[in-house]
Length: 524
Image 1 (cartoon, one colour):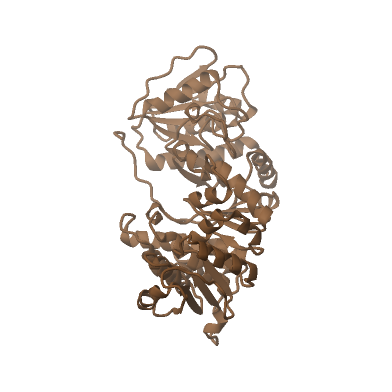
Image 2 (cartoon, helix red, strand yellow):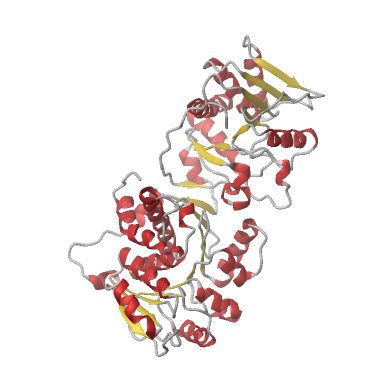
């Protein structure tokens, strides 16, 4: 883009937080005002100040900025931002307040009165006809039309305005949420009729809709601005949706005792690999050991012995009777965790072996990759999954198991239903990998990067989760911790290698350092 802006300092800062429904945000705002003895306008000023600081950090005072404000409190935020920018020397600020029904919210009206007393600011209150200003790719638009309190799609002139902004090529900063996007579910809402933001500045906690792939181009980059909302109220308000970050994971990690041996950290059995797919077994075994399992045994096709013991000499190898694929998944020794799936294929004898194992397995279990594809070929196996089994499908595997879905919203709803129905833990892999528990609670992961979209990354995750199961972590914690550490290892590897150069074995190699970083509160 041609406009001039200041580079913002970017740091990987983690906070533990809930993801609240839009309808409870006013309740939290009101509790904040009461607890801190301030009124709602003071809280609005605080929010506007945070937005203004973010904009000042990115754009020079010579930047042309066009502010579009709606009649509600989101519009009040935008008006306050316009005033603050003007006070900080941004003289090319043009403000359009849309008051087409002649009724502003109380706080928006107060901010309007503050703004019109300022000499020199370019302010237009739109009550009827509107001649839109010229917008080009050099301009910045601050979108304050509607926030997360919106209850219906944009219509009429607001829909036309959203399309005009989108077509202009201007850089768009949305306050709270892009206008027209709902905070939670957006089925049957046309994305063409929403404002498409390049940067979304939300307050304190994200909205659920930020985590769906189909909304990525609507939201753009999103950042959370701390406006000191009341902690006690946020702890009190219930939600089933959480964002997992380092302060969520750190208390769950168990310290390793000085006087301990490998048996204290569990034995994992990994049923993985076949002729041509032994790399999957290698990566699962390596990541399992890198994440602290005391022992790892790989059961695989007989032909894979030399590959496995050369690539991961720390792991034991248990050869199958069959030379090229797994035909027997009988568990002959005591293991604290069993992982099944990477690279096993979907041969009928392998599916038979899986069925027999599911009927008899007493250890905590994680299923991935071809184990899930085997179940998809024989769906009745879903009924055999032991309670709290962890399954880790990507979207293709998920749809093969549970039917085709058109978007990530549908897929998440189905995952919640299936986790409850089968009493299992579903780790649905993606940019924000989501862990769904049988209770219906949903945990979005905050680590990971596009470089991890590479062959074998899922096999590494299988080994990571198996490692925590082997060490005695509860399955729901093993899944949540495993996903976080897996993503963090990928982030650390990318910082040294770059997204294009990352391969799955790099993720495995960084797992130990990722765990250390969480425990020691190291800055990543």
